[in-house]
Each structure stands twice: as structure tokens, then as C-alpha cells.
Image 1 (cartoon, rainbow, N blue to C red):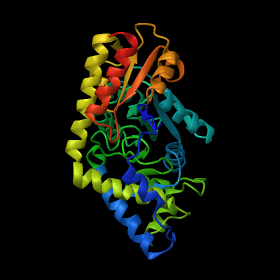
Image 2 (image 1 turned 180 degrees about the horizontal axis):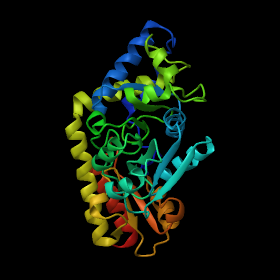
Image 3 (image 1 turned 180 degrees about the vertical axis):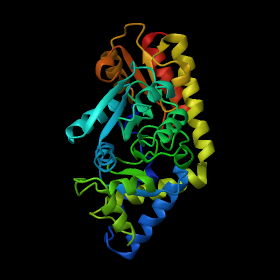
Image 4 (image 1 turned 90 degrees about the vertical axis):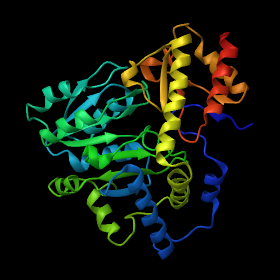
Length: 354
């Protein structure tokens, strides 16, 4: 029996989107692929509200996090950390031989422009990383004020929107994001395997001044290939076909504003239920619209809950990392509907006696 995924990715992929991956293969240097690729990039620009260069890499999002560091950190990077995946970006920065410093915020909270400015005004950093939507804690960090501070101090702003892009409105150009990356297995509701990324002209110019960018993730190699409507290495053609088709559905069938509204509605339903029966980990002002992190105030055996829900057709998400068993998470992202979410919550209620 196929189980409904209520985990923060990968999410369920609709049958029509999945079917695009089984279409006959095309050559990656063919005119057919060039048309497919450039059409997909144009749709991504619309979704990301950007005129920046956009690429699609055959990689998990972690690969593009590494690419951002290799291409855009010249001297020293500030890694804003408020959860497991922002910590990963610090680990990536250090492992690539870059000088870096942590700006740590309590898990369940978010960095503010003020504390970021305290660091950046020292002029010690030329880049900073931040996770917009920490799926380990259910925290969405407001980007507007932080982006203004980064611009004020001429710091490259590298942003992970892995679990928010296509579920929450992120206006790349208005915010001035230098790198904005996301996997497609979350809010896009496409099978894992590719990551999308926007790169500002400023970031591309900076990359020219940085040595040892590697090859596979060199932004300049990607842009050179784009001049020929191609990718530098063999692309994940089936996933790109599925993404192209899904973007049509997102942009033309549902519409971006309706999609964002649906995610907000599901988040509101989940938070209302969580506050009634448990408690939310983040403050209201930092709560994500795509994944809710809920305190296990009833001291439930979450592994037992997970097993019982699995038996009834659902995949449950425990807390992540050091929050395991202390919290649990409900993902409300991708093509998930309000009615499906309500059914899932009712299933949990049936197990815990609410």
C-alpha cells in the first residue's frame, strides 16, 4: 500500500508528474533538450521572481550549498545557525578550506537583522549563509531585513530555500539574494535528484576572482554552457521533464498566489491544532508555512506513533537531530491538500485520544 508522506521531503509526487519521467529519453545535446532546458529555466525565473542566471544541477541541495561556498566565499564567511541544516552549511564551509565563523541562534528561533549587523559591521566577512526555512525546527527566518544588512556591508548573501521555495513567496531580485537554491523534492513536489539555483551577476563577477572553485559546481562553467543552451555535464533529463510539467501546473493551473495561500492555510490549521493539543517550538512570528515543528508536551512514544500511523497508510516525521522525541514535525507542502492534512491530523487524534 502506498503511504502518504507527511515528512519534510521527499513529498508525494502526483501520478501525472511522475509519468513525465518515463517518457522516451532524448539526447542531452539535442535541440529537444535545449528547448526543454531553456523553457524550464524561464519558468523557474518566474517562480523565483528573478532575472538572474538560473541553473539546474544533477545533485541534492547539499551539492549547491557547497557550490555557493566554493564560488562566493573569498576570505571569510559568516554562517548563521539556528538548526541542523544551517549547521551543515558551516560544516561545508570549513571542509572546503574556507575561513568561517558561526552566528548561533537558539533552535526554534531566528536571526534578526540587528544581531547579523553586529557581526557584519566588523567588515571581517565577504559572504554569509542562511537557511530561510529550517525544516529541523519549523522556523522561517524573515529575509528582508537581513538582506538589507548584507547589502549595506557588501556581503554575498547565500540562501538555502530548500524547504520553502514554491511553497512560500521568495522574491529573489527584490531581496537581492546572491545565491538562492532549492531541491525539487519538497515544495515543488517532484522526485529527488536535481537542485535549482539562481545566481546574481554580482556573484558571478565575484566567482571570477576566486580560485579553486572546483569543476562540477563551477558557476562560470555553468554560465558558459548556458550560452549554448546546455549544461556542462549530463543532466537529469527525466527530472527536468517532470519539473517543467509541474511548473506549468504551478504557474498556470494553480497560480503562485493561490499556491502560497494554500500552504499558509495548511500551516494555520496545523498550528491551531498543535497549540490546542501540544505546543509549537517556534514563536508565531517565525513559524514556517511548509513544515510545523511541534513540542511533544504529552511525552508520547513517537516511534510507536510512527509505526501505528505507518500501519494506517501515513509516514510520520519525528524530531530531527537533537530534537528527536522532544518534537515531531508535520510537513504541509507540495501538492498536499487541506483535506488530506485534516485526515492526517484526525488519524493522529485517534491514536493519542484527542
